[in-house]
Amino acid sequence: MNYKTIAQETLNIEAQTLADAAKNIGDEFDKAVEIILNCKGKLVVSGVGKSGLIGAKMAATFASTGTPSFFLHPTEALHGDLGMIGKDDVVIAISYSGESEELSSILPHIKRFGIPLIGMTRDKNSTLGQYSDLVIDVVVEKEACPLNIAPTSSTTLTLALGDALAVCLMKARDFQKSDFASFHPGGALGKKLFIKVSNLMQKENLPILHEDAKVKDAILAISEGRLGTVLISDKEGRLIALMSDGDVRRALLSEDFSLEADVLKYATLNPMTIDDEEMLASDALVLIENKKIQLLVVTDKEEKIQGVLHIHTLIEKGIS
Image 1 (cartoon, rainbow, N blue to C red):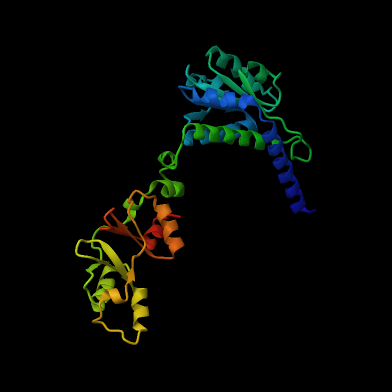
Image 2 (image 1 turned 180 degrees about the horizontal axis):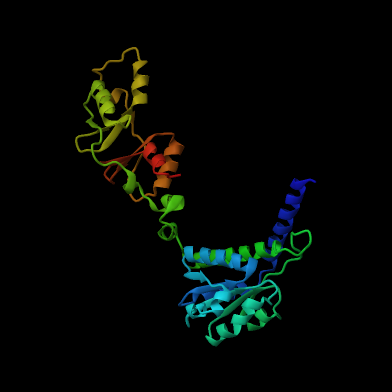
């Protein structure tokens, strides 16, 4: 049995489902976005079985991208959790057939609240379709399942439509990286979007020499500074150069090398700097990697040295 061919067929079927849906998306989608945007409460998502799993993911995506949302299981709703729905909320109910018994049982109670109900189903004439104020069609030509029974293409489409709603809402609200970071302070994602250069840069005990220093002074400062680099400034404290251990090694190859030579003779002039401590550390890492350097000097707008950010620090802190 050629599993690779089966996998390709599965992906092609689901991809075609998404392509067909993109062509046929209707005005009801715009209306759904507007209803959610005008919601003064929370967006409640509900569904059973596979639809419930998709709904839980949708609610999590909405909540993390600026739309207050939570998932409500219909069975739990019937046993008290229906009280979690408020008069200012909006409900998205998901059922491919539109006839899920558990979900259908709570629809009359939701309608009692007089709040908007958005249904996601293949059949506008189903129980869910009839109770809904607005229906987003979830119609697939066939499931990717060889029996055309197991929810595959339909759940993929439902999930993708949920993502599309979330993206529309993000753009409508001008949701930015900084907003996203505030919802994801922990883990790798939080580190990438929340930690700034100011949080990681070294400000104290910086190895700094004046421009009239000698090479021997630089070598000593490099050894004591433990950064592999010494910063060189003018009398006003503005950065004009830096000398790394690599610069020292290259200088040793010069026939006229002398420990008494001026440090600027072998230093790297006009090194790469940034003057924004609020830059994301992940963006600073991209800059370091692109320039193939190990140390990024942070200055103020007048080019006065404020601190340094070493690539080893970024790696140790899990910035990627």
